[in-house]
Image (tube, rainbow, N blue to C red; front, top):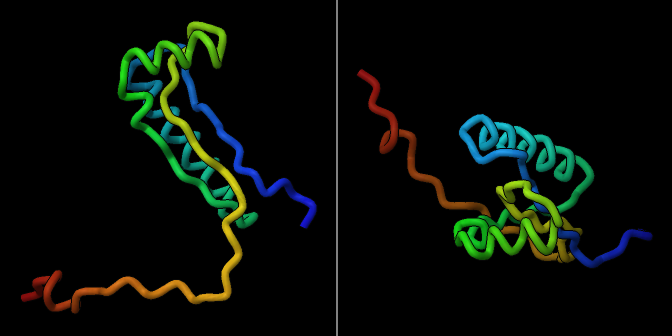
Length: 101
């Protein structure tokens, strides 16, 4: 109840830009997302800025102030409270997606 309602931005970055680094960022994302979910925080990943080479370089230089490789941006914050129930996602019948002989 005393938490700042403004979202925080996290940058997941690595020392290099190889497949092992990508795997490690995925593992870090998994741990962050689970920890946030446990306490009720919302996580929204943003990869588009990282996909643009110039934006990625500017982020590393001006935001991180080093030579690391930004891999993913995360917006983390408290969800907007609502009294409305979230509608269920429509599901296809099991017979349409599973073929059992």
